[in-house]
Image 1: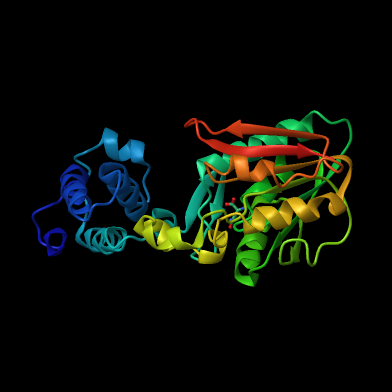
Image 2 (image 1 turned 180 degrees about the vertical axis):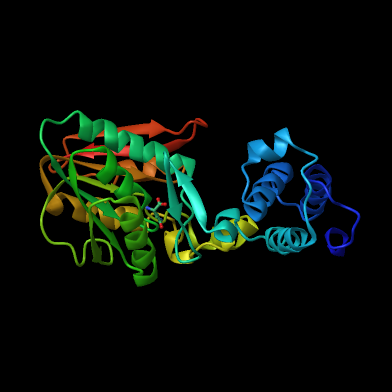
Length: 285
Ligand code: GLN
């Protein structure tokens, strides 16, 4: 990557072309997009500016910075960990390797939760179980009439989530808890994007995903361990008419159906994500 340090590549457009090739060779997905986002970050400019001004001159120090960032990306580091930021709905969240990088599928879960909350007359009590970066909890606290509690088993994740809540001005109460173990009280809505990947599949995931915390992904031998615990314990923490909304793994629907005992749950609806994969359920007590 010394190529960036030499005087050869001086404009943003030239740097991008070379960076794209570097990322392609390293088998990084969406190489041009990643290169643009990294260069934009290194220069403190927007992607739009880079596209509009491909002749934008890039000085040696900035080329060095960009080269270092590119090296990290080529080695499989998620872009969000490099920039320390990830977008979720209309908000920007601080992220670190202590938390899962928020996903577009989870934005959809938050939208379902917002729709439900905004259709209710009064303020609701909401629990985000396994809050990670706090993306769901903060978005709900900011956009709905809700008293939001966010929990996570990881103190490091909770620290990130708290920083995000403060930065965004989101009123969220934080509790360190292994699922419901440390949770007292009842809620109108429990929302969660729990770990749902079978343990043995973790090693085969994309390099970027393997940099994310295993405890945010690992759903036990069949991927369903945490779903089972959540579905089993949620009724004790839901108000009458309360709702449990979860993101799950695609292909888990049949197994999940068997986890709901008829005497306790009154409604169960499954929903697909925008790619057409089965991804969510909404259950009501
Ligand atoms: N709630 C966070 C998210 O959806 C973290 C979820 C997790 O760590 N499994 O991004």
